[in-house]
Amino acid sequence: MRIFLTGATGYIGGAVLDALVRGGHEVTALVRDNQKAARTKARGAHPIVGNLADPESYRAAADAQDGYIHTAYDSTSNGGPSVDRSALDLIIKAAKRRRTAGSKAPKKRFIIYTSGVWVLGPAPEPVTEDAPINPVSLVAWRPEHEQLILRAAGPRLRTIVVRPGIVYGGGHGIVGDLLKSASNGLVRVIGDGNNHWPLVYDRDLADLYARLAADEDATGIYHANDEGDERVNDIVSAIKPHLAVRPDVRHVPIDEARSKMGPYADALALDQVVRSPRARALGWTPTLHSVAGNAARLLDEWRGAAREATQA
Image (cartoon, rainbow, N blue to C red):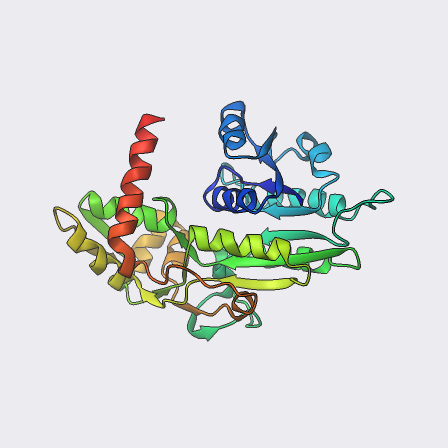
């Protein structure tokens, strides 16, 4: 299929790109500059240089696609939610365009939108895709965008919302930051650290996106996490033995964390136990089920990513 992908050089989008290319799809990837275009092309995509905040820069490229996967988020300014909304408006409009006569494309186009489990809010008991939402303030805008996508579904368009857990692997993201802090000798944990983080390995998450793109019956909300139900303290404890010098751990009171980190602190302090039954029903089975159980491997991935960054 011909698939338009945003965020192809980002954490989630990069993994999704690789999965789509392995699946034989023709991927048009929106990137910010020529350097990123070259890297994306080397990975098998057709890059389009544009800016998510400027829909006109990629409007033409978004036409004539069979599917759309939106993983990008513009965090470079305070206008991230409005940029996200304008991108979704364009994608929905492109996806609803009538096909040319005789098209051999799938009967339905699709849109996959990337949200996240933080829209669920506190969830100390297991919750599934049909649970009520109670988003922390950092992502209070996301439910409206989820509904925008879901309401866009129709006879010729299926729409999907993916809510990944905290992504790990490849040395990036929140867990990558934790590994970096531990390697530097000091880990700051927000709150008492007994809260559970829903987690998902980047390659397993990408596999789910590829499955959703290929399954013509897939529609609605899908959670994506490994269901390891790991506490932050357990993750930190598992990392320590694999370091030459064991790091100090400081538990930061939530009020102090808020004063320094703003609403991000509340997101990191969430206690969430999340289930993904709809993804499992598709046959999706994560290959990794634990950060703590794979601490040595993930440290190696983080070190490799750090070396690549210094050589870039």
